[in-house]
Length: 403
Image (tube, rainbow, N blue to C red; front, side, top):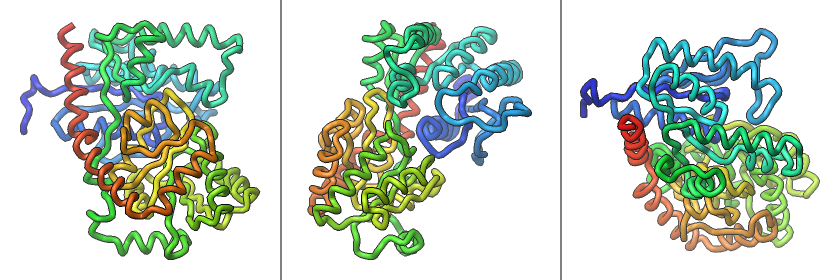
């Protein structure tokens, strides 16, 4: 369908991060942009000076800092100068492109986006991924009793008042905004995380399983051994140690499995933890897996796991697991239940023994794995494709136009 000029949106996305990297909010930014482009809309992403190129996307980078070549995800003393230069670059790009909406990611992005949107006289949409202060606590960067907690919470409250509309990736996050930050329900809309089910395919729909077998051999995974897969950042708030503890428990119980742990950073650290637990030969730590390669890697799995302990952050990897037809074990959080529903297999939050129990139940039950995998695939195709979600996003844009 060809859109008229009046129907096309010029969207300016603000991404205060080193876009593109192969995790989290980067994937949401990427897939939102691709889905909008498929419908004929124009998307420009303004981001930090570092990050990976993505073919087909208009990415404008902030001016580099001579003495600061890179910045890690999360809070950092390096961020303020990066954000100042990002704000200047965003305003420059905005003045040249004259967008119809500024779409900001992360709280710093919303603050920058508010200044730029006001200067341009256009609405601001904030893509809210979770509470800033709650996630800082989850990551171990902030304590509730710290003298910084009050001012940061006040700043978060201030930022949530700036946008014309806030979109959340889960209904749980929408409730959090309404209950903890007194955001009017009329300003909040849920646009759930989604997946491209034509890229993430299950084994039974894949046409080149020989390539998958070759990848398994390349990674040194023993033949005939069921594989438990994890794909995402490696960290304590993601539950990486809990997964390794569960793997050790299952090995002690005599349950034969291999654990394919895909992600970064800290591969060496978690390799040492696996060795200390006596399971190093059963764990393959791949390091960073490019997002474009993730569908092939997930095809190696028989069971997927997400031991994330955060109760407020999104969990988009669960959608990739579902699209790949993988029965999925997760800690019991509101976000996990919202995504997996009654088809998820849930362990007690933060309990590695419970996690081992649930993984073990699936490893010894191939028929149940098959049944759950097919049901999860059907669920994600019906409810969680980006081609469906993008229409919800456009509805939010249209709402801001009327205000």
